[in-house]
Image (cartoon, rainbow, N blue to C red; front, side, top):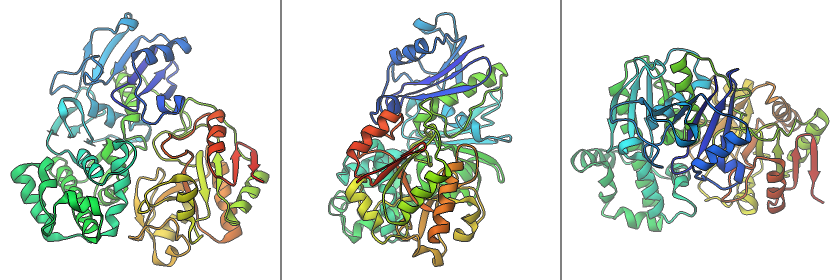
Length: 501
């Protein structure tokens, strides 16, 4: 019994294959061809199958008619459809876009899930937000709430356009996320936004002036008033999402939270302190093929699994650094060097988790500025993340919880903010990744431990291994090509350490 799940959509196309043994293989087009957010076509799906001599018995896709493949009837989460031309012998199913988002969290699900909540740019039938009850019980699951009006992700895209941000608009929300912390929330304006939205709709809220200034002008000039407006607008959306969840779920329920909106680390920290939530690192469209495959496995009553999650791209395994190499890298970092760190297979999702990373000592005063000037070319307001040992989380944050996927902006205790100055944001938070000693993370765990022993610094600044405007590098050839264009001091690829003269 062979199954395929795929999403080619409008961007971030991905495919998941599953053989009769239940092992899942995941492919993302942007990593394969090194073109960010790349959209594939049906010929790419066929080519992946042909290259793997893979001819499925069951096919599941989510398309929403973005590529004329089909769409579920409105109100339906899934339905069987006619076979596709090149999979004529396979039973074929189409599932709802938001349903696929929620089901994609299956590698993290260890218990019954009461609700799936999806906040997204654009689902099927222009739905922007939805709540699905009993999502993993496909015979009982149903959408109990949906909204075409609550277009929170699209509002951030519009703000990015007004700010004249560079790059693709798919990345605008992530770029804006860090800027709100430079302003002060205005509770009166937040109330006005709520009233205005109730009367004129969410999509029109950017027409509401702030203290006599048009939002367009504020975004253009980026004065202190702009940051106060943005802080208020950001908080208003957080309140709206909180209300959506509170009004459509029961107390003490388990919730999978997914969709592009679930990449907002500020909202995630706020919501996870109020609700029992599971958020996958691949909550954006890059995870949809996994959701399709999970539907198929539930429909057929077949167990599926992913080896090494979240380091599960079907790409080149680079191997791991030895303790001797780790000590050399720790020494380079302690001496202020910028080091590329590429190990094993690459991680799923948009954030580097220690297998395709660029690392820096976070205690260096100007590390953020140097990294931006030399390599990342990011907006000055955007913070960098840090990887810390799992056993140090409570020491640094005062809270004991897992932060495995850089999905939470967590307050850092005051006594540690100065030593971690290059990763602590202006609001005193940091987007942490907690690192534990496992097969896939052992070399990274040992590196952080060695660096800490040498310097006394808790953690390492960790950003993705890619040049500006490019996706995270995947294969060894991709890594070396990027190395030629990046102003790194050194590169550790597997157990091979290259140091620039």
